[in-house]
Structures are given as structure tokens and as C-alpha cells.
Amino acid sequence: MDNEEIIRKVLDGHSLRTFMVPDPAIPSNDPRHSETYDLPHVVIKGKHFWATSECRHLTVADDTPYANVSFCYTSTGDIFCSFGAGAEGRLNVMPKSRYEIHQWRLRKNYGLIWDSDGGTAASVLGDEIERGSKFKIAMLDAEDIWNVHPVDLPMYWAERGAFELKTSADHYPQVFRDPDAFLERIMEDEGVRKIWSEGEVALSTAGGFSTFYRLMSDGTYVNYYDISRSSQQQYKRLMVFSDNL
Image (cartoon, rainbow, N blue to C red; front, side, top):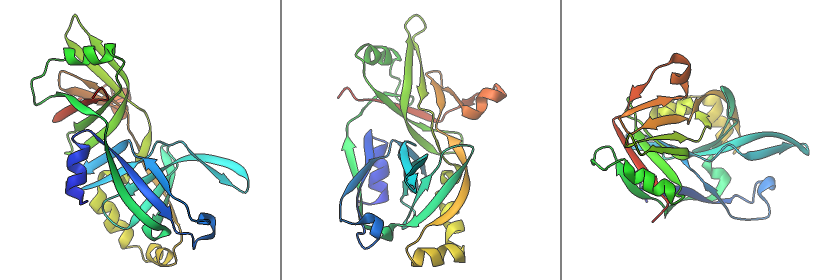
């Protein structure tokens, strides 16, 4: 499955996941087993993407709970990351060779119900809210980046014929918003390449970018950083998906 097909299906409502078999030659991966992660947060720029799990994987060091992290997978190269969310989080960059098998999985479990390009009435959101549906969005922002995130709170005002959607508040590394630049920077780092060649982990830090958006049916949105600036922006396109198939 190539990147173009994955991106097309994600923007058609499919949920993106991974199937992995960690390399049992690495002692912490033994005995051989299989794993999967749901990747609800997807950031797409051009032909590349980063997809991350929610930041709720508890890491344990020396038998002591340490911190929650997310796991992050990309189309741009043979790497993956773990990230301790926050304003300045710990970023661990690892080679995909730490997996014996790593494959993408797509599940068609959401359908498009509203598209800012389609002229659909906002009342469709009210109907789906009344049914108790779950929602997610794909929003093309002013930087030509697709932001795909689950909706935490949907609201519909019948008298105004308008909706507002608040997405789940999480963080991913801001550098993921430019996948080509991130890969170029990493691959130019001789120390990182040496660590990868030995199958180890490259430790770094990265500023976090919030997944929170407040999206309105009138074509405007507010992200996490707009809140303190009392500003708002215009999206180029917004698609809303419901799990009521």
C-alpha cells in the first residue's frame, strides 16, 4: 500500500493503525509477539504524513512508572518515534529495523457527513449528535496541512443552524508538520545514523504542537495558540466524519 492510497483513504474516513512484530533478537522484545496501535492523530503535508497514538502509553524504567508517551509512525522513512507530550517533550527516534514486521492497516469505520466544499446543511451534525455518534475531522489549514483528529465535544445550535466541534487535546512534535524537513535534518546527523546502524535509540527533545481545534461551520477555526491571542483563522476545507455507518 503506497502513501498516496493511505492518504486518500484517511481523507475518506478510514482509521489508520499499525501492525508490528518487534524483532525478538532485541532482548526486550523476546519472546516473539505481535502488536497494534491505533493512530487517531494524522498530520499530512503533500505526499507524506506522520500518525501518532494518543499520549497514554505508560513507560516504566527500573520498575518505576515514568511518564506517558505516544508512538509516532511516518511515511517518510524507516524511522519511528516515541514522544513525551508537552511544550518541550522528549523525543526518542528509532529505526524501524527494531521491528521484524511493520505494516499499515486501515479500517473503514467512519463516513463523511459534512464537507465545507459540499454545501451540506449544518443540521446533519445535529441529527448525528442526537444519535450519540462519535466524530472526527480532517481540516486543511492555512499552511496547506491536513489535520486529522478525533472530536472530543460536538455542539449544534438549531436556532442558528450552526455547529462547533472541539477536538481532543493532545500534543505531537511540531517538527512533524514538515515531514521532509524533519527527515532531512535527522538523516544529516551522523551521530543519529551511527546509533541507528546499531539498532539503538537516538534521544532528543522537540517542541509540542497541540491537536486542539475549535472548528465552526462558518469557515473559521481557533487552535490552541489562538486562544491566548484572541485570534481566529480560516480553514481551506473541513470534512466531518461520523461512526454512524
